[in-house]
Image: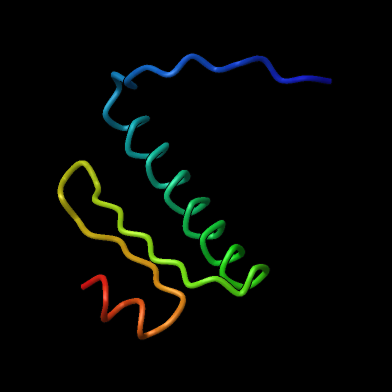
Length: 68
């Protein structure tokens, strides 16, 4: 079974938009961690929520110091 292409557009409902942001943020952080482990790569990820809250991931302290 093939999943159809999803149209990218802004989610109008604020609650749905926040839930989607939280789920996608979690998935993105997980993928960044997996990339750092599987490829032995230094990874840094910075995400700002719609309300301006900062979420960050770094695979090592040296990357965190460089980015921040």
